[in-house]
Length: 274
Image 1 (tube, helix red, strand yellow):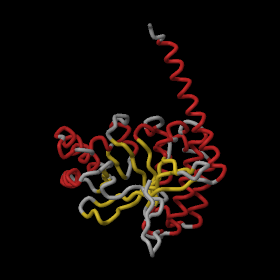
Image 2 (image 1 turned 90 degrees about the vertical axis):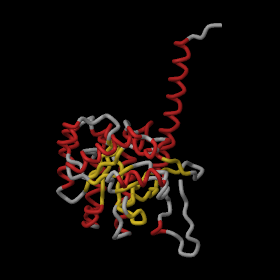
Image 3 (image 1 turned 30 degrees about the horizontal axis):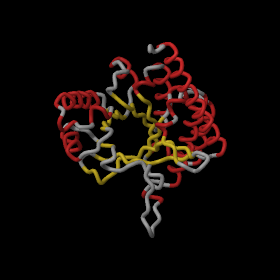
Image 4 (image 1 turned 60 degrees about the vertical axis):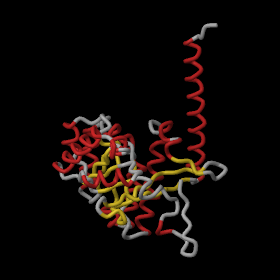
């Protein structure tokens, strides 16, 4: 019995399209019903891991049964659609609210390059900063290396405008292979977040140790604050601190929390991690 490769490929694409439609519907309904929230993960100082340098706010949605859906289960299906912009708006709304409620919080939020120039997003930002002008200096916008390379000139102009107001920018997944050093030099990010694939297991990986050390030197040359992602083992944290990373992020120091420490119930200390 022979396999029809064309038929198999058609079926695979059809199943993927069906999943994307279901995801699209789920996200649309969650946005319409206001079922969005942020989970907060600490980014700690490499030399003093008990001290958070800032937190990253990660968008979550709730499905119709109230179950939390992490971004990894829906962002890829919607990031190139108008829903991707709507999700960025929701994340910014929640983030600015958190900054207004917690005066000493510094927070990073993810954003797609496709959201640049999106009027609703800019309106959310303008209204949030009008309520709390000092929030700009505590807000960090994260743009992935893959996303930044799509329109470097557009990204550069956008960054320059918002950096003038005190907002910082982080290049996420740095080293994943998308951004040329020419673009990196021109974009002038404030923070570099090293791709986690280099950081996980670095204790036993000489090649990754060399690459991370090189990327840290690049960041230091351009005056960037450097962050290692996906840090899960004490041995890796020790190596990364030795290599000169400024900060570390990963489950070793805290999972994303829907109820961060500033919202904990004083009686139970209960946390909900996702």
